[in-house]
Length: 173
Length: 301
Image 1 (cartoon, chains in turn red, brown):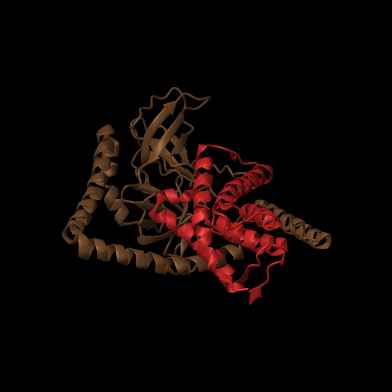
Image 2: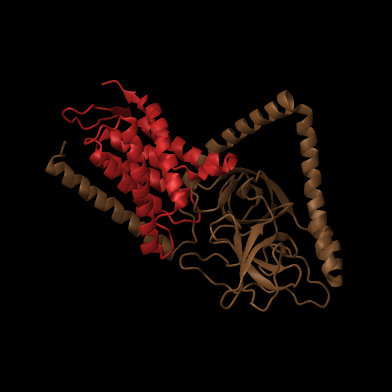
């Protein structure tokens, strides 16, 4: 099954097999739970966010972008006991929508723009998560901090390295 | 700059609103009724556990082959023996420290191991951890088939790890001592003052309900009190890492005795009964329930 990207003038068209998208999202969730067992500092990584961001930016279709964000977020919620299901779902839905909405306005293939977008969307994701947690669960959650800054820089750098690998999943147009 | 057609944009915004509202409602439903396991959680955990187990086996095997047979064949074996010996010595040292405090406790601790022999236990391998830094859980390769049930205690030879939170067919999720939802009935080894060690979401936990008049020293050992009916008494929980005067109770930070960031094998206590009360002591009472805003789990782990 092929998922079609919106065709924009002067913008490259990228198509991905649905199976590849699903496999990338599933693999990100597995690694997210698997890596911290061997590398404690790997809890800084947000691989499901990076996968959501990549496909949102590349496919440039807000509807599929937000639905992918929802699916990945709910999957991450389901693996994050005792946290209720929906916190990451909402945050990643917004990221998927935001990324696919602006995907056509930037050169998202340039490493610098990938770094900046990775950094900004990490903080957008965290703010959405923190606001939901504060408003709905009445639980304390910091908006900013040294740890968050470090995590956002690490994930932005990882986006620069990871996105070219995901580019290989593109189907020839 | 490209702009999406208005109809497409409105359709996407409507979809976004619908999906977010649906998830908010989903959260609201869970806040009211958290006790049952959601089907999506069961599916997700089962699917990921299926993938994790082969990964774990492959990595463990590769690591074992490299370390044990190629690179450090002899050293690896010696290391394993030494680690086993260290674990045994730590358990013995913990017993001796506690025995030095008080004569009646001496007799109880001498019977510690014998009493444990009566408790059914099960070894389990850790096959995964939480998907987020916020929640502190691990996944073990034992489940309903092995007669596990929620609220069973999980330990290592070094000390308390946590309790079983959810049980699936072949796997279970363990809530670590350091999770915000966690709590263990505990006491200070030197003074026998009782409190509850709760997680803070950080690597260290906090001992609550110790009054300011108590003298608490950094480095002092904290043991289980047995009051929560999950862990037998006098198991090591951790050591005091910092003490501050609070209002009305002291603020005591606790470094867990078990290495919660490097867990590989754990022991599940298959019974929730504690050790029998020593002569002259009252039978342990369960800690009063203090349900949180969205959880109905027992407060003391």
